[in-house]
Structure formats: C-alpha cells, structure tokens
Length: 293
Image (cartoon, one colour):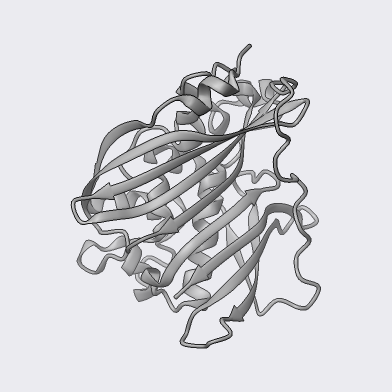
C-alpha cells in the first residue's frame, strides 16, 4: 500500500541542520512580491540588508531544501506520485523572532494520518531549534488523492468556514507577477507543477500554478504591513487552508477582519480571506488566522 499509516506514525523524527543568511531572506521576500515600489522605505525593510526585517513565513523555506509538503513524501511509510499531491494547509507558531542569519536543527515527523476514503491527509510537523532554544514549529497538511481507504480515522472536516458576514476592516489587492512562480522556485520548491505546462496538465491544471506557500507569504506580508505597521516580530501564529489555486499574472484580494484581545495590551487576531479578484473572487486561502502580540 503506498501509504502505511502505522509505519509513518511510528517513525522517529528526521533531523537535518539548516542555515541561512540575509541573501536567503531577501530572495524569499522578492519571491513573494516584496520590493514594489523599489525605493519605498516600507519595502526596503524587506529588500535592503542594512535595515532587513524577516517576515515570519520565511520559516517555511529557511535552510533551503524541499518544503514540508514535498519532504513529507520521503518519510517512512509514504510512497506516492507527486502528481497526486496537493498542499492542504500550513500552520506556523513562532517561539522567537526569526533572525536575519542563523543555524539551527530541524526535526520533522508525521504526526497524523487521516483516511478520507478517496484520499489521505498527512500532517508533517517540524520543530526548529537553535543554540538558544526553540525558534519555530510548523505543520504542513499533505493531501494525497486516491490514497485513502485503509479504514483509519477521518480527522477534522475539510470544509472551510465562511468568512465573517460583516464588512472587512481592510481590503488589499496584490498583483502577482507573470514570472512570480519562477522566481519563488529559487527559494527551494522545485515542484514542476509551478513551471512545467506538461506536468501541470498531468496534475489536472490548465497551466502552471503559483506555489501555495508563495500566496501564504504574500498574504502575511499584507497583514503585517496593513495591521501591524510592518512590525514582523509581533506575529505569534499564522495558519491557513489552501482552498484554490492562483495563476501567475492574477490579482489577489486580501480581506482582513481585526479583533483585539479582550485584555487589550496591543494583542489580537486577524481573520483573513484571500480570493482571485478577477476570477469572480474564487477562494484561494480559507480559515486563515494571524495571531499577534
């Protein structure tokens, strides 16, 4: 059987050493669309090494190598066709701000395997620690078509919650460059789905699609710039469910609903809904939440 849930869950963590510096951070920021306008001081904090701030979603590519959704396919008990794989969701919890340069240990393991009948969902958790202690924890949900049916637990419902009915507090539109996926690939995700038309067709798409994690990073940047005045260190948690595809050249519409914490103190939560603005607002990210200090 391509997925042996018992073997996958019983396997110990896979540990690798990772390192990054300002060049990796700058490339990531450019890969998600930062730097426009190029001389805007608010953009220079993402692109100029002398005043660089690290957007927390950089954690998903720090150290290079395949992203969690790809790395999970090489874990014990997992042997599936990449063309049948979709990125279902991503969650990130920050223990400390991500430094501009660092060296750390990343320990990854499958912590859940759900049987959806006609598909399987794997959850890959990665804990990253440096010499000073825990840095971040992220979880990637890996959706594999055609690999369910072993009689396992179904897990949480896959239906996204609708966005709030009231008008959003903020709406931002973010254009996606025609070559955005080609640029973002340089951060380490070489999945041909995002560049090769023939592979994209085999996976059921009209043309290559943008990386979900590129949309994920671009959305967090919109929230940080709009709600947190660019203060990246205030982000504590960020999670989303990938509800649809984005094609390079489209425009993202990012709607935000801000809710302050009951005890005040500047903390709070932002609920976010992202859609393809010129495609009848087709959902792209759902169940998206940013928690901040």
